[in-house]
Length: 279
Image 1 (cartoon, rainbow, N blue to C red):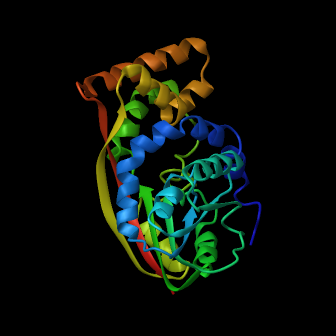
Image 2 (cartoon, helix red, strand yellow):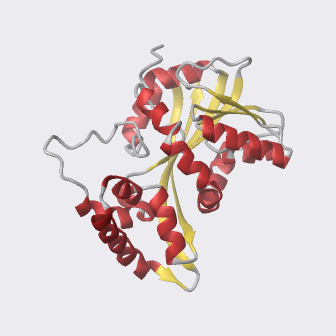
């Protein structure tokens, strides 16, 4: 398989992207916990099963599966995130193992019974090739269970701020970007992710909508700190100079303020829980 097709994503997640997620790991894991619970419930892992965790990041899903008795290998091509995952597994005395490699070309010592992923499966430049390779890593009849984001409009936890800061981004003159470009929302279209998996040789592909309210923060400062690290506001802050950055932060603050209650900031999230079988 081509080894250079994911170079842009590899560079990002081994640089600023991976370092940001390591810094924000505890806050992000707490926020995404309801969705991880939905993934693990859907995967229905049993003790002793061999599980590949695709795009494991800082290891939350790998550790969750290992705590259920599965024999987990977490796979990610972000070296800083894999290092964080290994440190967490060691501190928790959980037997999860980790491999820093590109899923389009990784080799494995034994076949897996299941593949899981918490938002780690949408970043392939050539997704059909990637998922054909991953299918070959499972036993016949092995199952896939992964979470992918639905469209931004169904995810207020990102879109509330995204819409508020969009006017601060430069307007492009070219065509609108392809929504299937590798990134968080590449699999937002149910028909597209289904077609990718079926073309890659998976069977019994099914999607279930998963919606949860996420607790983003207890205070505005905490909320802006998180949004400044990940999501649309983070992009705006990277690309703007000081004056416009402050204006964008003010716009984000104003957009979030009406959503705070005495219990903090809660906003909705929507995902597809994707299931399939390895032929």
